[in-house]
Image (cartoon, rainbow, N blue to C red; front, side, top):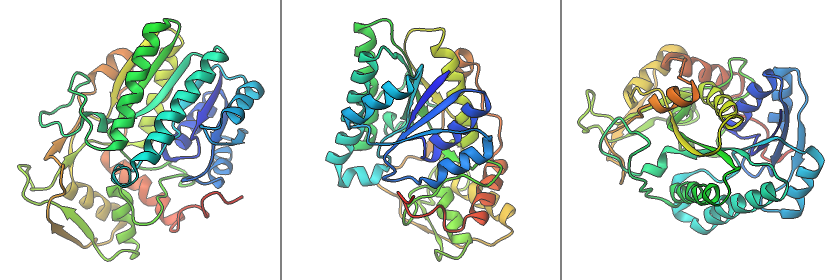
Length: 341
């Protein structure tokens, strides 16, 4: 199949492109490289020994996106493009609604016009907000607590209304939990700008000596070691989940929302211990006050993904940390400057 991947140079998008190429699909990436790196494309091609069509464009640019559809004529779209930092979204809500929501609306209009109605969407477990009861199933209340999560929830609602009006659409929304890891080659991985928002790259920058210590937010939760528990999943398992979703949209219609996670929770200190083991470094940390809105435990019930997509996670926490550390050692400064090339 011919697959258009919006935001394909990003963290999860790039790993998914590798799997798509290795499965024999033709891939085109549409990305404006505002928070990703053009060098990623070369590395994807190196890993897969396959070529990718690159369209440097903004998903909100109607003329440019229509040109992509006319030139490439995709059979399906993987939609990763969007701003993705929950904390930043609180500071800049208009940017998040503009890019994530309006960009998705424009993409859907063009897909409808071009009669391309198979879509896999990069959603997020943030749509659930602060769920107290675990494991979290897809039946949990949708109650996001920040603009980033709101945009994901609103886009999902948009899909629901769309398929109600036109039954020829087939859309899968994949609600990720906490991605960790990198491709085993060490050529692609997570490369955040500035101080990382996510735990794993934060730990690795401390291990490299770029940051003095890890701040652990809250040590008095009702968990075995007092630190928060989350569902961490290898990025390559997530990539496999997207291929399973592609198989689904080729034989089903309607809108399906599915959690992607391991179903197992790991605490901050457990993640830290695994990174210390694989890096053979003592990583200093300091327990500080809880962050507003954080809950003690958050992990998924992955049974729906197994039942409907035939997908389960395969890679362990130690493998996540080992692969992430290999990537970090090979790329201590991440990729080149965003938008370079």
